[in-house]
Image 1 (cartoon, rainbow, N blue to C red):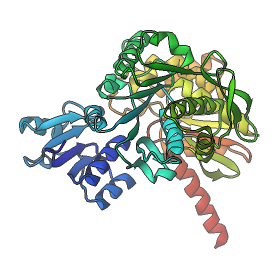
Image 2: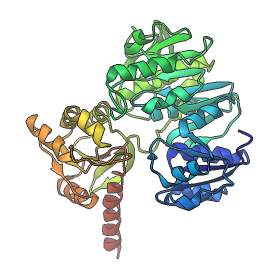
Image 3: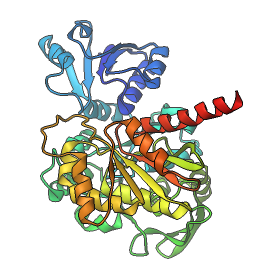
Image 4: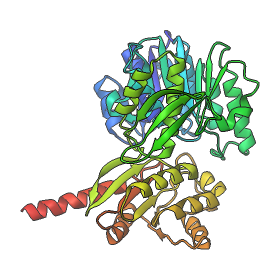
Length: 459
């Protein structure tokens, strides 16, 4: 790492890339990079001393750069990547770079799974910052108590999310892994569920024998040959750690159990049964690190969630507006079930599908998930790293929903979606903007409308 004095990040504004850039600045490296548009994250990096270009251009890559780091979202024909290759510069993808950094830490805790990674990482973070461990935390989202997506601590313990896309987590060097769930996803890369499962098994094999694997009990048999300490969590006493005496109202609470023995009474500020299970996983992990139960109780109680994970944004005409990152059918159903539990009126969902391959492969599952809301508005598919070949469209989800006796609206723009919401929403309803793209821009159209009305009335 010491020979890389000038590091260039292609896609520096991304949530994980920006954390890597920030920690390199903190360690005294010269940092530059590029992204497609300005953001508050880029402004923060610039204030710390990074030189950032808007748009990816060949001229940004110069011979004085020691290392170029890029994300999986960067295509092979990216002009900056091609220029770096022409100049024969050192080039590394984000996962490999993070894995290299990971080697510097005595303990490396990696949290993976099809969904729940950011929330569970946030929960573990909230607990660890209550201790004297001084953790270094890389979060795949933003959390107010961290002041963003990075907390710089000591080299004793590092906490990060570990994504399975393109088997990227195989480049990490964990001493502890939390595997929350394994489901079909990233099917533009993986062949099927069995292919995904094989990647997770290979990932678990990276843990040293003295390390720990904290795994969802329903997947336990996949890891029967893993040599490290294997600990399970789940919803009942088939698991090592599990909840009893669950209550969802007025806030989620339960008794944390370990093999029939009470550990602690837990109360959460984040809603939904899925978050109870996430918190059990977090508790199992930190107990294995030697954290006491009282600290766990306080840390979980203090956790208020991360941005874009069932995040309350405001109101529109008496209807609550919630923004959620859910973009997989299982996540979506969990979010909608939670919304149904806590609203007295209708649940109105604006969904922006994420990637064409995911939408095509899980079309029936997306349609079924959206039958769990009262009103559905579909936006165009967020392409992310893909190109539209015309094989799939958001309207195809509505067709499938019609087959399930459930209707939906198609909105060709964010403004059109906001206009439909305005025609549907009443006091007591819950409006959810859902997806991993930029669907949350709809929120601004609704809230800005409210502010405009307020200003007009006050004048």
